[in-house]
Length: 337
Image 1: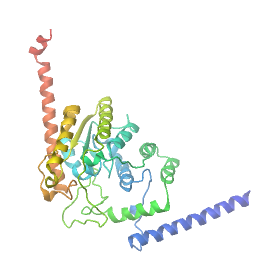
Image 2: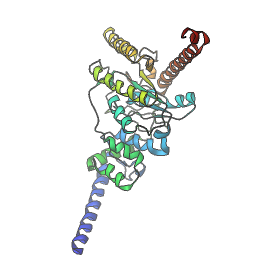
Image 3: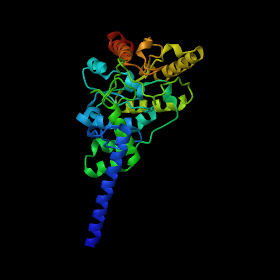
Image 4: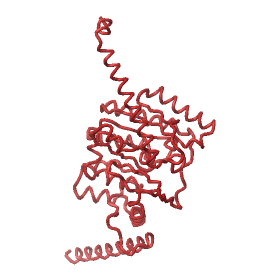
């Protein structure tokens, strides 16, 4: 038995050495770096998205996600086009942008459901445009997301790491992080600000060859998208969270008359359905030079959008307060007798 255990340990050691060797060789081939960047090592494979996995790591550091009073949850539309810094200054408490590439409302709802009763959030902002209507989804281990924040034992850590681990995915994620984790003037950047957002700097902006750029998308899939918003709305009502859906603008030169009708349809429907939970910024005037492509924005565009959002939220709060005052007035109390 002892001989068997020794052989098992020995062969496991050899296998580990061989695996590390293969990973390093492939990493060097991909990055052309002689020395590996250990700071960008992947630490989880909870999803098949390098951005979402990196965001989970960032969100856990300093308890950023769990302690935030304002959460922004969306795709790259939220990641690049909403300034968490402006929201933090506006509300005077911590904001965190949990957005990630291609992160759809139905995925947002699943994460929220896992975290129910555990978040400090008082406000939730869901930014979107028509690309969120696309019927696609990432592979996400939602229990793994919960464990990532709340279960700190080594068994859970190893489980989250190895459940979806493969040499190919490890090398791909590691080399990708190495390439894009340090730059704020490149497409695909994973350089998250303290608040979790990715403000893109236009100066000397690098457009990767593999970046195809966003294209306009019509309203196909809107019904399923809308049902996801309904689920999020019920969740927020149940947990006393102030919810805001934000319909973001496209670059104006791509909006043909037919596309304008589609945008108006979405705006009209969501206004009727969600009332003051919906903020329509679809026709907001944003300078063309503040767009990276037809939908993603540089930090100047993000500031324009976020300031407009803040104005809408301020107006909404003012109206709500006036309604409360009107309801509480002596005249109305007498009228109710």
